[in-house]
Amino acid sequence: MIVPVVDLSECVLCEICTDVCPEVFRMNDAGFVEIIELPEYPKDDVNEIIKSCLGDCISWEDD
Image 1: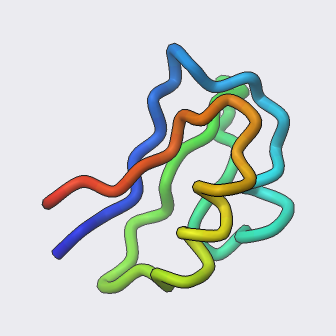
Image 2 (image 1 turned 180 degrees about the horizontal axis):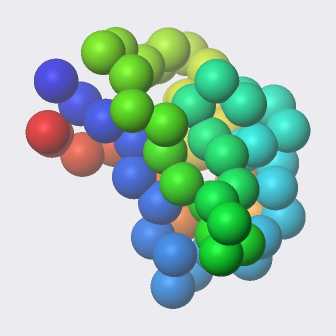
């Protein structure tokens, strides 16, 4: 299975991912974006976020 990952060193905390796709992305208590564990991720939605990410820090990775 492929899962979305966030390279926090490149993340600019624009929160586009959490606004557009809150079922996959959320801000944690430390103020960083994290991925919500799901049995399967909505590929079209995540691909749209990957294209829209200002920090170009979201990608797919094999689990």
